[in-house]
Image (cartoon, rainbow over all chains, first blue to last red; front, side, top):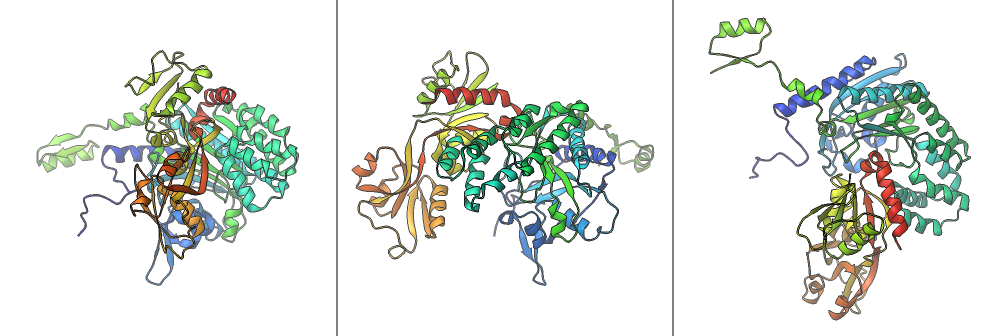
Length: 358
Length: 209
């Protein structure tokens, strides 16, 4: 007989102060989302496995099980596939744009790391029906306000586009294995690894030069100019135009100090189709939020509608102690009441906290 | 301030040497002290000394912004870190070795190959890619002994000169990967401390021979 003193690896229990802290963060973030007219969606904790396999893709990380009728089900590893499916089906005839936010636990079979277990809390927004830069800017501004609301001043949003690197790769006409090998070394900015690959690739010097530059294309507006000098293909150029427009808007709003153009980051779930971003906080070794555009995802569930969104990792955000959040710990002290129920009710009716001494 | 994780042991001297040549010096003798934390003379860098196998972990979690470790350790820990530079020291091979003259594993002699190693992940990846069932026998030292006394059929280990293998009647059967010292960078730190981190990568890149 197994001893059940321990809970399964990757799960956790929040009690008292830790739970209160979680809810304070959650409420603060939800109020930002609601302030931008996002409505809450509470999806089920599990759905058919295919929804996540088709949408999210990381099959090896999905907890799956079989119901009594033999259907394969899965505990949600993320919200976006679930929400996209709902928008493409139940909400198909609703007026666009549709703005939704969610908050809850997701489960992934992955190595617990950076304060994030296998079960962890995600909170995020999804914007359906807006294809242009306005929707992109809207969600970025909401991300910015979220950090500000939490009292985290030193945050940085790294903005890139899958189309910049996509356009470069399209032109190279390489077999998939070679592209994967290139992505692998670029993903870890492995300069010697890249050189070793380039030696054996039938590419013109101009294209090799682009690939050598990609890992370092990170910074302010100057990065866009540098990237322009490297690429000519229309897909990459349009991606740069788009990023530049967003950057200009941020400059006008005096928020560009929080935005970093990052064309060297090529990681991301396969469903991303346009902008892609990750948010970092100074002093934390892991990203705390990520998001981007995933126009093809609702179409995979039957309704072709553009989509953009992001999610924050609450478990990681909570590691950033912010005075604004901690002060709410000091709730009104409960008044001790000595088995006097009348007195207790009276105090409760006047809104006071009570604690019965039993 | 940038935190740099260095390995104790044979990597320490060449690592400190590289740092010194890129302008990061220490007033104390890092190599002979018992201390584990040292601030550089310019107070802009802090070196922490950890076990070689732990360097990728310190960097992946952001406890250190930067680290120097062998590629063998990186492959084994599978740490998700940036690896921009080959520091060109600590060269060795990660190899499968077995008794001299051993036939290649083709499945007829061994339904499951027993492999003794300090590198279980690298070993599993290697045999999985070839479809050969493998039983890992985890050891932490004197790996060469295992095939000699019947504990294992093969070993997977790092090989520098090959002398230890040779002295024990073993030989390299296949090289899995080449290894040397790598510069590791935490992903978030690369973004949030970009100027400092890039400055250091550039400085080191110039002095690596």
